[in-house]
Length: 168
Image (cartoon, rainbow, N blue to C red; front, side):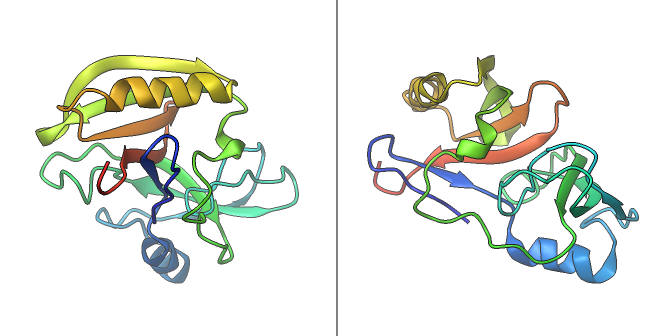
């Protein structure tokens, strides 16, 4: 899933909805055969499919192990815990740019070249959309950078991937 902004010329890739559908159907983590767990949300962490935040105490979510490198660098796994809605949700829309829902807490941006090589030291932007846009533009200005992983600074978990838009 990708979303492109015309001003920033980047795409935001949320989790593939077919991966989430498999986890919902089997309650097993992709690639690892670890069990997935259903719980009532205890905090407003984001769903990795719709990138919207959970309503604590009201929404059910699934916690499981996920490797954000599984598509781009499958030989170099780096799995960690993530959440998705227990019930199917609307995947992140292609035209929404960087998700506003992710700008309400500190974010860490890890910029990678091929072979999962960390090119830029982690950069953090705290609750400021302008800082997010500036950080993404600065990182993608380096032609060596292939993609950026956006992570929660507090929890360290993967949120989404940012990459150059086609033709950018």
